[in-house]
Length: 491
Image 1 (cartoon, rainbow, N blue to C red):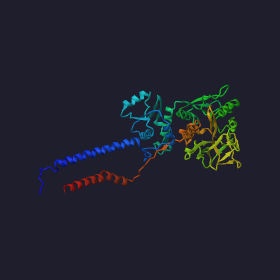
Image 2 (cartoon, one colour):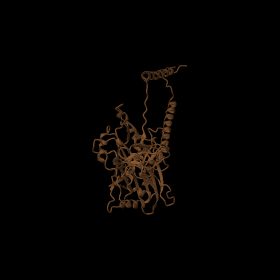
Image 3 (tube, rainbow, N blue to C red):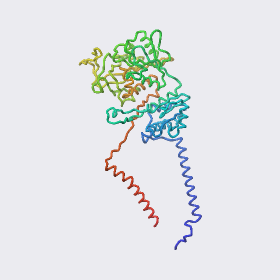
C-alpha cells in the first residue's frame, strides 16, 4: 500500500512528542552542565597532564601562596604571538588556581593599544621598551618583571659560528614571579648591610665580571634594601641590620671592627661570609673559629670536576634546607678554600651547630704550599672529600634577634656578575639568604624550567608523501565516506 505523498510523515501528536523530548533532553543536559560547574567550583582536584601547558608549582611557591592574604593584581603586557607568552600565561594560571586572591589580566599591546597605553600611564611606564612584561600590584607597591629576565639562553652556536640563532633553553618565570609577590605583599623592608673598606667585591659594579651588582639586584628582588657599612671609628652594626654581608675582603680587618662583628653575631646576628681565596688572613678566621668553623689557608683542586684551570663544579650537597633542593645541580666555584667544622669542636647543648653544606669529590686535594699566589701540590696535601661551605646556627636569645645564623663559603667570585647565573649559584645564594632570614616559606627551591624543543626530521620522500596525504588522501576519504552515507540513506 503506497503512502499518499501529501500525507505528513509524522502525525501532529508524534511531532509534538519528538519536540517535547528534545526540549526536555536539552534542559536536562544544561542542568547537568550547570551542576557539574557548580560542584567543580567548590570541590575539585587539578591534575597536571602536560608540564608544558600546566607547570606544577614548586614547594617554595606553594608556601608563598598559602601564606598570601592580600589581593594581588597581576597584569601581563604582552604580544600574544610572542613565544614566551604561553609559558607566562600557563604559569600565572597555576598561581591563580593555587590562590584566588590573585587577579589576572592579559593586555595585548598589539591588538589593544588603547588598553596598553592605559596600563602604561597608570604605572608610569613611559618608555617604548616597556612591553612584554608582568606587573604585580598590591596596596600601591608595584614590581615589574620583564621578559628579558625570564629566560636563560644558549649562545654556544652563535659563538661557534654554527648558527645565527640564540636558543631560549630555560624559563625562570616562577622564581621571579614568587619573588615579586613576596616583594609587594611583605609590609617590611628588610635591611642588609654590606661591609666596605677592605677591598671587598664592588657592590655597584655591573660591568666588572667580579662585581656584585647582580647579587645586590637579587637581594632587592627579595625586598631587601642593601646599605653600605663601615665599622671604622665609633660605627656599630646598626640594630636594623637583618643580614651582614662580607664578600671577599682582601685587606686585614682591624681588631675593633672584628669585635663589633663578633658582638653582632653573639646578639643573634645573621652573616653571609664569602672569603677571598687569595687573602689568607683577614682576621675573620679567628672570629669564625669561635663558632666551631675552620677556614683553611689553602687552595682546593678537584681534577675530576674542573672545567677550566681553576674552576670547580661540585654536586656533593648535604641534607640541609639550603642545599637540599640543589642536589641535582652543580655549584660553580673558582679557587676555593676549605671551610669545615672544626675538629674536636664542642658538642654541648649550647654550642653552635655547624653543617658542612658543599663537598668536593674524593679525588680533590687542598694545596697548602702557595708562593706568590701560585700553588705547589705535594704528596702531603690533604685529600678529599673536602668541605667548601658551612651553615652555622645557634639558638636564639629571647627578645633580641633570635638564632644566630651564618653561611660561610670558601670563595667569593662565584657570586660575581660573571658566575652568579652559572650552575646553581644563584639558587644557592637565594636559599642561603632565605634560610638566614628564617623565610621558611621560601625554602623549597625554584630553579629554571628547561624548555623542551621537539624536532621532526623527515626525508624529502617522506615530506612528499605527507604532503599528498594531507592535501589529497584525507580529504578524498572524507568525501568518499560522505558519498557512501548518502547512498545508503537513499535505499
